[in-house]
Structure formats: structure tokens, C-alpha cells
Image 1: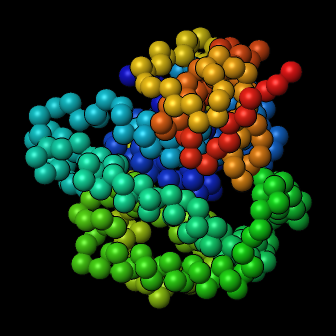
Image 2: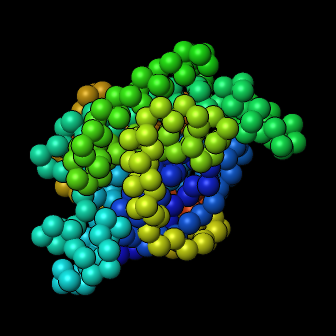
Image 3: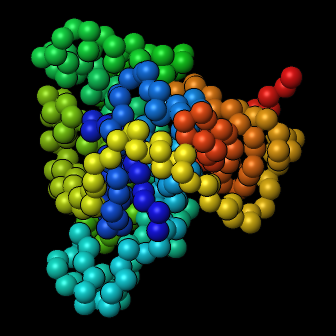
Length: 335
């Protein structure tokens, strides 16, 4: 299997979601640290404009958004090749296999719909409530107070540009919503270790990362979690999954990997045309809300679940950039 290259930075909550999914799957991956604020020239060389964190690179294929990254990781070759007695996984000790020697799955077959819906809620509604509390004026002062003023100012200006006119929750309203959501998660965890049963799924990873940001990145604001001890215990179980086997890699090396590779052949999936834009058209794709930067390229695929654009960069060469359909806007480039 080609190397998995994750472009991320340590305090990114969505990157923590991806890191934990890699750990859950027991995968080895290369770790490329990228800036937390613009400019990000090496990121843009791969994506053509998209700058949100993280990105997953496999050769000359670039996968944007953790919703799509989760799907990609789910379909990779299972990491456990030996007989059951030799398999190891964070949910079991050495020499202990999951039930029936199963490979860990992010999308349990009988729960695919509901776990995706909860994950989408967690990545949006829960996330913004958590950020509204954790990065409130009090939270921002705690997080950046020991650093030079320009660091906090640069972060605030960068995120303000990414919000692109979004209406944010006021600190008090965010805290109220956050507390309610934490209680709901606690109810889901009553008498079971994870949100949907005995093993984590995509919903757990999506719900965990905004809480991780509060607890780990800005612990001065983590007192809000204390009223839900069951949630804290679940967070400990999630953290114990680990990050798999990362090794350091540079963005220069990652761009060289892309330049030396050819994009993987596209799967034979049906074309779902909801826009009247034929394949082969020049198009742009951008996030619906947070992070307005566009990626321009040739539309190669428009399936039930994702878009694929082909583009060429002076340094990265010919790449395929992949986006999920949900949460992204496709537009034709007209002369």
C-alpha cells in the first residue's frame, strides 16, 4: 500500500480526529506539520486553494475533509494480516483479537445511517458550540496569554477570514449549548463504553475531537466537562486508542512524492449530475461556509458521495483532489 501522508498541526481538533482514526485502524503514516494560519504554500501546491486541516495524501491523490478521509481509511487494506492470535489492537491487549478476529470498522454495517448523522452533527453543531466556549474571550486570553500578542492576533485574524461572514455563538450561548450536548453524550454512554456500543465508530471520533480541544489544548476552559464524568471516562478510552505509527516527514518530501506519482485510477462509479455540469468541465469546489478558498480543476468524477478534480501544479505535478459532496459547493468556471 502506498504511504499515507497526513498534513496537520498538533493543536488542530480535526487533525486529532484523523490521528485517532489512524490509531484505531492500527495504520502506519507519515506526519507532515503544516502552519496553523496562512500562508500555506505547500498545502496549496497540493490542493490548489483549499487550506483546511488536515489533508490525507496518498501518492498524487489528495483527500480533503475528515468526513472523506474516514471513508478512505475504511476502505484501505485491513491492517491485520496474521492469524487472530497474533493480531493486536488498542481495544485489546497483546495477542488478543477483537471478537471473531474482526478488523475495526468506522462504519458498522447495521448503524451506517445513524452514525453518519451523529458524526455530521458533531463535526458542525457540537464543534461550533465547543469552539465558542473554548475560544471565548476568556478562553483566548488563557490560550494565548503567555505568547507574544501578535500570535493571538494572527490566529484570530486568520480564523475570522475563514468564517467568511458566519454568525458565531456568543460565549454564554455557546457554553449553554455545550453543556446540553455534553449531557446528551453522557446519556448515550450510559451503560456502554462508546456512543453506539462496545466499540468506537465514526460518531465517537467526530464527537471526541472538539472536546479534546477543550480538555487538552485549552485546559483552562475544561471545567465545563466535569459535570459529565461519564464523558470524561469515554474520552480516556478514546485517547487510549493512540495515533498508530507516525513517522516524521517534510512538506517538501510530500510534494516530491506527489510529483513522482500518478493519480490512482478512479473507481467505476456512477455519475450523479445534480448541477448540469458534465464531466470534463472546468470547475471550482469550495466549502459551504468555513474556509471559503476555492480549488479549480477539471471535473473527473461526481459520484453519490464525492467530487474529484484534476489539476496540475508546477511543483506537485498532476494530482487528483477529492472532496465530499456534503458541505461543499460545485460551480462551473465560465469563460
